[in-house]
Amino acid sequence: MDLANLKKAPYSNQSRKRVGRGEGSGSGVTAGRGNKGQLSRSGSKKKAWFEGGQMPLQRRLPKFGFSNYNRKIFQILNIEDLNRLEKLEDITPETLKEAGLVKYADRPIKLLGNGTLKKKVNIKVSAISKSAREAIEKSGGTVTIL
Image 1 (cartoon, rainbow, N blue to C red):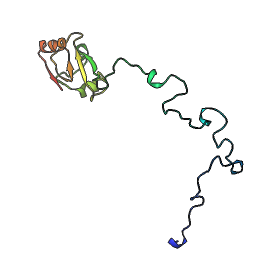
Image 2: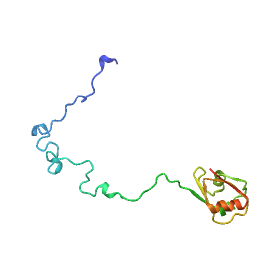
Image 3: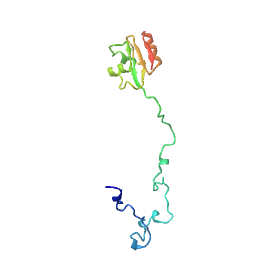
Image 4: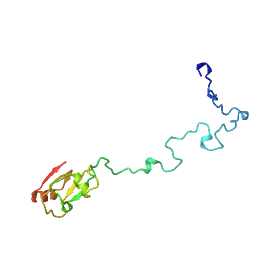
């Protein structure tokens, strides 16, 4: 096959449909617009956002309030949960995940002061409450914020 043998694809050069040019053309009378109704009339237009009389989207949406999509969602951990760990030297998010105290090691963790701490703890978390920090420092441990 070479360029001399190429042919156009069938129907590749069809002329446009000429509507409203008599019944013999196949699209006379209503010119492909159907019978009656708003869109069959000449000069009819609908706005792109018009919903046929249904309550429009911009009126259905809430106008007040605010959802902060950039908020930080913390995994909550209490001091009493730390007593379940066997090795308490250096606690990282990875060790907390392995122990099953948090679900994800790569998401922020906040330590709260609920309960009592029985041992010395060195812990690394994303955030900590004031009471939790006091309890850890009172037991002789340290807190590192990631």
